[in-house]
Image (tube, rainbow, N blue to C red; front, side, top):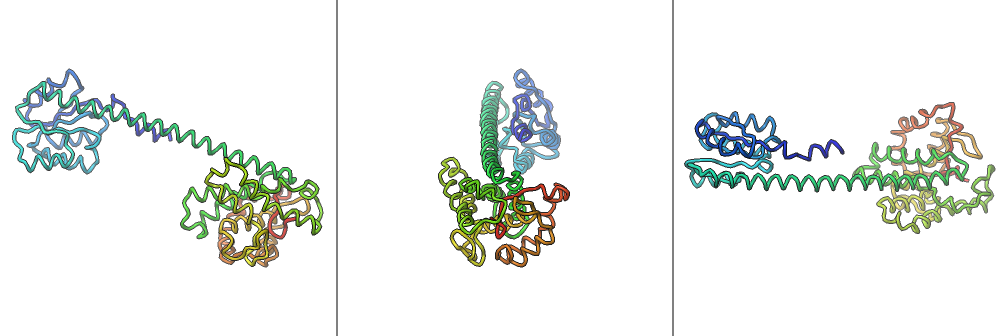
Length: 382
C-alpha cells in the first residue's frame, strides 16, 4: 500500500521543468529567456529528442512547448505518441506555430493539446497563458494527492476495523472451543479447510475472492451456539444420553439466534453465511440431519463444505471422549457414510484436495496428533 501511495503522489519538484522543442535555435533561445526566470528549462532540437526526453522521465515536466514543423518527428507526430502513452492528461502541451490549417488545429485539440500559440509570440501573453495552465495542473495534482492520501488512510482504517472484527470473531469462537475442552485450533483449521476447498475446487466457481474470505470467516462461527449448552453436557467425557443429545443438537438453532441478536455482526458482509452455516452445518444430503431436515440442494454449498470439514477435523483429532483416528480410517468412514451422507460432488472435490489438506495436520507433527483438539461434527457429535 505504501508503494502504491508513493507512485501516485507526484511532487511539484518532480514536475517543474519546462521543455521547449523547436528546430530553430533562435526560437528556442527566445522562449528560454522568456521562461527561465520561472522554470527550469530544457531544450530539444527536434521531435525525436523531445519524445526521448519526455518518455524517459514524464514526471519531470510541467509543460511542453512544441513546434509543429520539425525534422525527425514533427509536432503532430509527437502529439500522437504522447496520446498513445496517455501522457496528455498529465503534461500540458502547447503547439507553437507560424502556420496551421484549420484541420491541423482541430486535430491537435481533439488529441488533447492545451493551446495553440501563433508565432511571432508576444512574451508576456505566452508566459501568462502557459503559467496559468501549469498552475492549474499542479493544483489538480495536489488535490488528487490529498484525496488519494485520504483514501489510503480510510483503507488503512477499514483494514484495521476488519482485522479487529475478525479478531473478535476468532476470540469468541476460540472461547467456546476452550469451554468445550478444546484448544481453539479447530476454528483456524475450519477457516483454512473451507477457504482451500473454495479456492481450489469447482465448488467456489464464480465466487469472488471477497466472498470466499467471508464464507471462510463465517465457518469460524459454526459452533457459536455451544455457548448455550450446559457444561455437564458439553464437557461430558462419555456418550450422551438421547435426552442430552437432543439438547446438544440445539446448538445449531441457538447459534443462529445468537448471531441474529448481534447488531454489529448483522452489518458484516459475512453475516448471512455465518447464520446459515451455524444453523445448517449438521444437515445431511439425504435429509437425515438437523435441525430443519434439509436435503440435497436445499442445503447451501457453504454449509455443506463446513459440514464435511467439521466431520473431517473431528475424526482426525482427539476429543474428550475419543482418540484421533488415522487418516486412512478417517477417509474410510467418510467414504462409507458412517458420518452421514454427503453430496457426491462435494465428496469428489474433497478427495481431490484432501492430500493437500492433510498438510494442515502434518505440519503440526504426527506425534502431537493426539493433542490437537476439535469440536464435534457429523456422526461424531455428542
